[in-house]
Image (cartoon, rainbow, N blue to C red; front, top):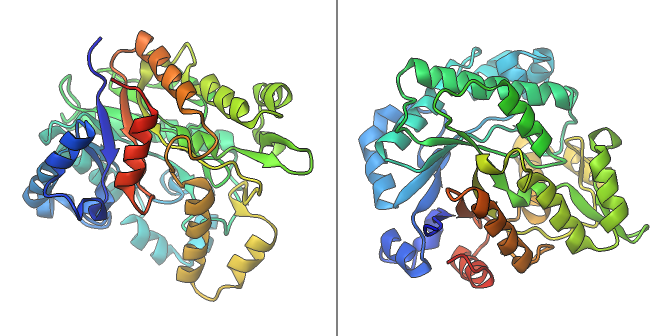
Length: 384
């Protein structure tokens, strides 16, 4: 079996002590880096105004994976589902147009296509088309569009993107993969489970079989927590989001949090109908929550009271983000949270047995010392 390709997320502060990214990759046995395109140039700008300098920068960073720019509430915006609410939450129609670039979605699709074209010219491994419905201020508003409608909207957007690229001759047999990353839970909606991705593939026209799944383990872990009163793990979600298999997992494994978390991952990541469609595992851990901070997109209890009491958009935004990064999207090293590295290692090789093209992304972007976190995670895995 071929060597498994491994990548890491890029943050500028990571390389203060390194002469070059190439040397960093050699030291850690990496095949390249993933970069968030919004970090390269703000999503409200035209990438092609700076195309050559951006390509040169990406080459110098050994970038092999490009993560798309994304915007809050794409469902309301691109499908015009409950557009009135979108205007109310942003404050005016003019503010909506300013945030998204226009009122039709032309800027968004143009930007995504430019990012994909840059990925192609870079000969990148994949373009991560991460579509999520989340609020511009985490935790301030609840979802009023049904989860089913949001899922269907996400499939529509992926299909629209594939057709958009195809019509511009950007999608070819040789162009990069398109990796659809699963959304988190509680504060995000989108394609989250194996069942959601099965629905996507049942509808998707994909002439070159480019659309793959990027399973972010951390995002799957957003769903679970530990109920101190009941002294067991359970899904920190509204009843409407809990499918029968979730109830079965709670009943079988709730008293064993690590087993519960592993079985939840395996239900999705090892799904037999999808295992060959898995492009990448985004590996990181998440601590087991004892507080359900978000429910249906909205902060709970005094956390909600605290955020709405703040007197500016920026203060509210920072308050929500701080909770997200500390308790949900923390991306701590494998083994520092609820996951068992040996079980994850075994899961990886089960996927590779059916899908030798699987790649690994060490997504440790939110650690203050990302190099130390990466070193720790690599030591706990056996991926040679």
